[in-house]
Length: 315
Picture (cartoon, one colour):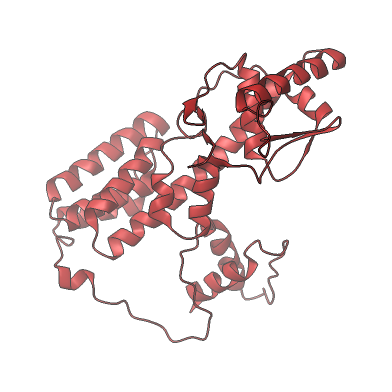
């Protein structure tokens, strides 16, 4: 078990040596720990941290507040009382959360599961958004936290969407229903999730609730966004209502899909969060006057994977 466990998805919890850490002197102290832990890949200049958390203070006061906050955090984390690897690497110029220290961070575990293609584990590691309603004492930190929250929120929804699609493909309708409902818990107006839930219900033999889900979808879309369901959703409802979609047998669910022969490299995990880019590149390549599309970016960012995915959609 890790000496320090930090949970920031859903609600905040910090546990050190199996004991909860609760005596944070202020929301800024708590936020400083979260900020450093989520960005432990690099050191952060002290003057920038002071300006981020105490933007209204004079520079000298802000730096003094930072110094006091760091002292309190080091005390709470046990850095002042142990010779083990410290959690905070503090110099006169910079501060960094020690990535080599004995800690566990739920956001890090979630991202690792997504990268590994272990989508259902990733979903289980996402109980809620990043620190909703956190009492920020700084607008600058609040803006950073909101951006980070939205990024993780979007990735979680995409992960749930792909995982539900995989469950539908393999006849795991109960799991598909649960994944669709998780999406709707985060965004009740998410129409793709309503369609997945309708499909999972009707394929499991629950036609009545599949039809009822369309009524709920229509009501939520109108109340929240003032719009009607998309044509795809209405078409799915019509197919269910007319009996063109119904419960399937186990033999039907395990029938392998038709494979198109090609020499593209195979990957063992699903590509998550790149649907928009794949669609945009595919659209460019289907234009008569478009002869070349270049995918650029730093090494390791997944350019080859996106290119292969585009090729698969066009075959």
